[in-house]
Image (cartoon, rainbow over all chains, first blue to last red):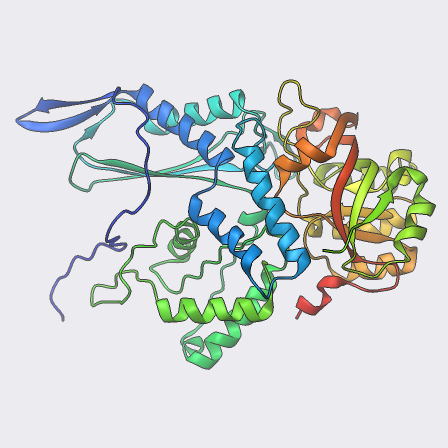
Length: 286
Length: 186
């Protein structure tokens, strides 16, 4: 038997996210049993969620806008492609005014939190975050998209955009509390696929063929430009799918680029380039 | 870039279809006029009405249908963000609705199945692709008015009538069995 190794499953090397400071209120360091504890006022969680869901509804990151701008310069882009890219950029100018959200489908609010063991809120964090979601969807011109079931076949719009999906992980050392806020539209959520396959697929020829076939399954319904994420393996089906979601949000961009004995998650840059080429050859997603 | 073909949606469905029939798939269009808006639940309700022997509502016969559901309307503006939803979810209704005189011209986003190409060929229908995504600019520049006409209790899924100008679209499926996205199918 090999030696015991503990491996953090997603060892993100660095955080290149651009942040903005909302406030210095709602947090303070207190001492308890000789230990420094970060005390977070529940109102701070509510404000953070409220601002995050507002930002994500009206703004896109500069890196995403750059991809659209690249279509305008691409010699292989058709007139129709360029017209679409130009329209998307103009759309973002309108959205940034803060009245009309980027997309009419303002999505399901999804929040993934990692709470260090020295963080104390004294409350139900998911409830505070839900309150922030509620406030944003109430105050801004977003859409109530959630339908809730009453029986197996009957459902009704909840008229608040709740419930949100809130996953909070705890137990690691430290006094940091970090969050990934996502709004996921039904259309893009429907493009999530799980394929349970065998070892027989893990060779260059079979895998290339498989990926090409299944990219075609995605069709042309999503809005350009596509962000395609492929995840192979993992400890369970649900872990594989949640990894795909995080990867599509850019959350795993700074993973290492090779595997190790502990089974860490990594990016395969060579296959990423191959998949990008497949996409360009197929011509889906502008 | 070559200019788009102007289509006046208020000339009546026969005239609109006659005009569309002159152009090939991929043609860029500039739509003006009235669209009726309906999506998943409204389609399920109308199918139920037809199943019960009730007639197809006139608004579905007289206007092209836009598959969409808007965000809230900002104060002082005619419309909230209002881009197209994925057309594929409505595929199973097309032939039935067209045979009852509705859904003859559909506007939404994304590829559709062979049953829609077949239905459009057999019933003289068209599917026009609107750009997926630019919901805010459509609301600001193209959608001039919005009114709820049926199933108000469905919220964003209620049936609406909207008046549009300079609303961009492309011919994706025509009345001759052509489908622009057929090349991307398996």
